[in-house]
Image (cartoon, rainbow, N blue to C red; front, side, top):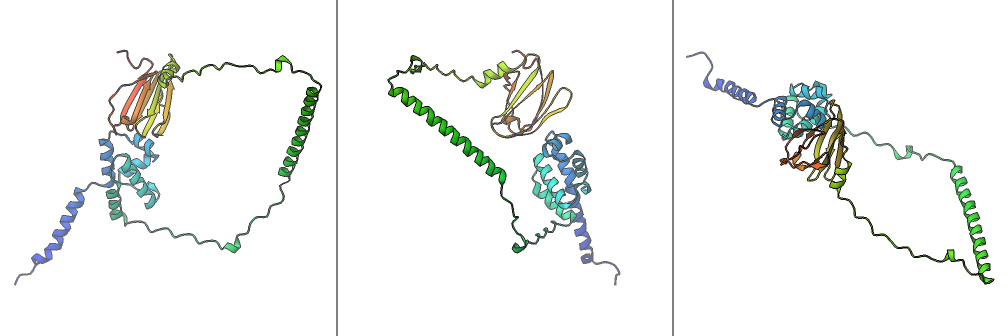
Length: 281
């Protein structure tokens, strides 16, 4: 007779080791978001600008610290937003967050309805200002109508006496000039580009794209999303820095000339242009 654990008693411990190995093989939520951001070629500043999530919160989430989010509901929203910005499916990350932080948050109870009889319409006095304005308009209209009738009777009297209208009253034929043709937008863009500045025009021709533009001092000029058909023009005395979130959807004009680059759909491009761009040839 032996004293000790039977093989059946050791099986639960083996299952616990297998589950632990699976947990170690799966990266944490913050690690998964960080790896996807780096693979997309984005910085924390880029993600913060695109999602409006503050940089300190992005850093904290990538370190698996959700205390700065302000609660589970906000943490889930930040995880979903950051995952979409770095091209990840947010649902597995949200499920992992639920496993690690106690499942989905309880629904917020609806506020009780107000009783209808307690809401009474507010009594308002007569609007004397509107009445005075209406009376003044009526008086002005009556005076104008009277004067118009007097002028018509005078003209009828002159005609009755046999007076002939003056030559100046005879109708004259005016020759219409042909309408000027509308200028081509690309020609106007070339003519409008000043020689002493760098001018960059961005047009979302094939879809929507997130755009960021900075001047030569690194100051943010624009940060937002252009919908299909929208355009933005940026000028600086020496240099314009661009980040195109979906370069394949963008038509780019620099100093009045179209940039013929084979940008791929979904590609993130970082570009810098000066007064001498594009180079001749």
